[in-house]
Amino acid sequence: MTQQNHFSRRSFVKGGLLAAAVPAVGLGAFYFGYEKTLGDPLRVAVLGTGDEGGVLLGAINPDYVTVKAIADIRPFNVHRAFHGDVSGPAALKARCGLMTKYGWKTEHEARKHVKVYGDYRDLLENETDIEAVIIGLPLHLHADAAIKSMRKGCHVLCEKLMAHSVGQCKEMARVAADTHRHLAIGHQRHYNILYQEAVDTIKRGVLGDIHYIRGQWHRNNRPGADSWQQPMPEQLKRTDPQARKLVNELERCKRELESATGREIDAAYKRMAQAQAQINDTVLMKGGKLKTGDTYKTAQDYGYNSATLAGNYQRPALEELLRWRLFERTGGGLMVELGSHQLDAAS
Image: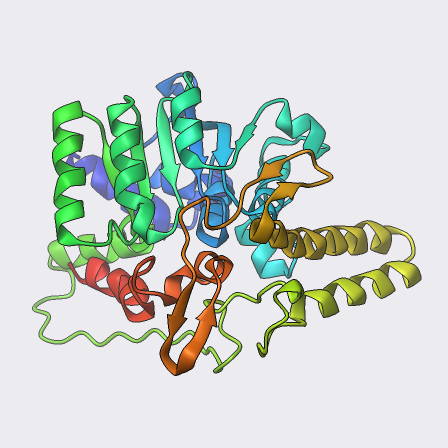
C-alpha cells in the first residue's frame, strides 16, 4: 500500500466522512480497499451456524458473498441461521439471519437459495458450486473441516481457535500451501479497523516511544448466567439449574402472544418460534423428523459422547454438543477462547 493511499484512507476515517459515504456494513471493506468491481459475489458454504457462525452470517456483505449452503446438526441453529436471533436487540443486530441479509420474506423462499445439511461432511461431499467455506463448528472439528474443504478446492475462513493442537494447526497450514488455497482464522480484532489504525499510528511514530500499554476486557458474566453454559432441553429430566429455562421461556412467549396486538404479534410469534426451535434440539437424543421436514440423527451418531465426570456426574452426549466449549475433548477452555483474541491483537 502506498504512503499516499495510506494517508488518504486514514484522513478519510479521521475526517468523519466515511460514515456518511459508506453504509456501516461496508466500513471494513472500504478501509481495506475492496471494491464491488471485484466481480460476482463469492459462492460460500457455512459449516456451523451457532452463536459464532450466526455472527459470521450477520457480518456477510451480499456485495461480496452469496451463501449457497449451510450445515448444522442443531434445529435451533438452523432456525437462527434463517430468522436471526430474536433473544434481544444486541443479539439480533449481531445475528440478523439470512432472510434479513438477502431480503427473503419466508424461510421457504430462503431455502430455495440456500441448501440445508446436517453433517458438514455431507455438505462437502455434495456441494459442487462453492468456492469458499466459513467454519463455525466446535473446536475439535476445525482441522478436519478445514482440510477437507481445502482439498475440495475451497478457500477457508475458520473461526478461532484455529485447531485443538499445534500439530493440527501445522497440518492445516501445510494443506493450504499444498492446495494453494487461502486459509484465514477469525480473530476479528486482527481485522478490526480500530486495531489496524492503532497499529499504523504506532508504526508511523506519531505517539513517540511507547514503553507501556495496559489493556482490560471484562465480560461481566455472573456465575450460572454465562452464555457458555447453554441451557439443556427439559426432556433430559435431570437436576440442572437451567433445566426448565427453555420450557419457561416458551410458556412466557405463548402468554405474550395471547395479549399482543398490532406489530407486537409478529415480534411475539418470532420469539415463540425461536424458543420452540431451541427445545427441538431434544430430537438429537433419539433422532427423528421435525415439522420443518428436516431429519436428524442422535448426538452420538454425529460423534458426541456421554461420560461419567467428577462427582459421578452423568453427562449425556447431547450436553457435550450443546456445551462443547466446557469440555476438553471438544473445546479449549474459556480462558483460551477469550485469551486468544488478546494474544492476536498484541502480536
